View: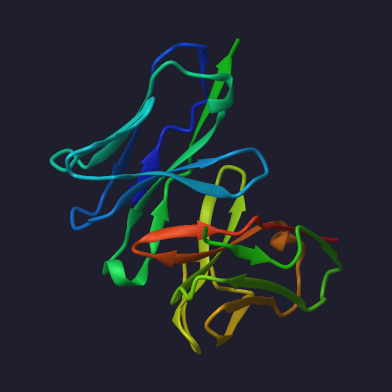
Length: 112
Length: 110
């Protein structure tokens, strides 16, 4: 089993739709969780951190489920500009190293 | 804003050449990382460094080495480039668990 797994998609949705991605992780000791966005041929950029209590930033909501060991990203009212690959990342070992394991990414295509 | 700068966006090299990829960050971060990214394989960690002159192997260190002589600079070295090292190379630095990436270097080895 991979340490961090995502459904690669692609998820094809119409504008205005709500879409959700999940990301499972295998190390129950993981403490830090993140969602990154990567546009085609560009570098990953932090979208949001995922806290135990969940967090929301505009149309984006991230949740952590420790019992089932997954994090989720919900995008409401999808825009064309949301089309990208979304990578989840989970810390490894001590948070001091900053070492993360990344999922392979989930591709989202928002259609007009 | 955190700035991570990679010296080249595109590089074309020949098999057997020694290749240097440079990465500089301006935020005094202690931890720095080198990844390669290939379609279907995601981000794979090559090497990382948590302090000057300190380095640790990642998941795929074979064929690569690194140098960290100054805190702000982390270099990736391909000792003898091979065609299977054609890839997108991404450098990152880290603070408070969050990694910040450079724009990437797309390396082609012919």
